[in-house]
Image 1 (cartoon, rainbow, N blue to C red):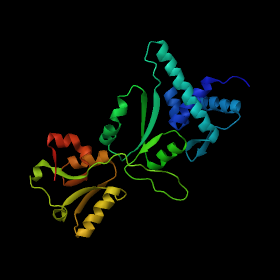
Image 2 (image 1 turned 60 degrees about the vertical axis):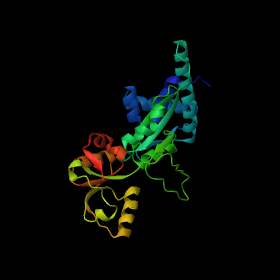
Image 3 (image 1 turned 30 degrees about the vertical axis):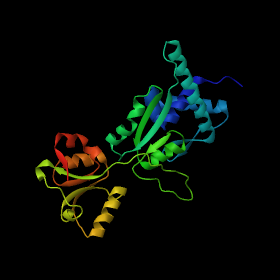
Image 4 (image 1 turned 180 degrees about the vertical axis):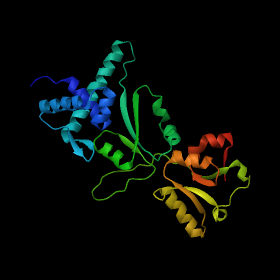
Length: 260
């Protein structure tokens, strides 16, 4: 058997981690057609297809997953070799690929991942996407774990497993000009103008059940499914907002918003 072409292997490695030929071509500064040709040549040399189509995305085949494991080892060892010969510490850096739901607070992600960011032995790769895309990344081993603010539904056709790694409080906040009196929960929420997470949110579902049980009906000004947008709407000061304090930490510290 002819020797492995490591140039082809690196192209495959890039596509496997990026999840698409277009993204990998942009990263490597080559054309998509050239990249596709190199991967086909690697598949011909190995005698196996490495990718299969799943809608618009590429998924690794079983042979592709095996090849990716070897490619990760090969290129990690190469980086360690360069570091050692250039007088570096020689510590092998592990790549940790983390997917985060687009609706998950960026501040919360930073707090959770901060210990890893400062480690010399870990290269952290963070990607944001919708749940289906993230789960597809787990399926193809393009991601090592996914951060989500909702557990993954389990059924007979799925073996996904969710693990609680952290929690965050939820507060009702309002502009400082709204006064200093604390709200009595849930009674004072009756008729109160509120900005809420969307109906798909687990936080919203629990909140709605509490209010329904208490017979309380707030006035819903807006429903927002993105934490960054929820922060911006809360800053407008048109009403109160149900939001994790970590999302509006800067506004709380400056006194622009206060917890009620």
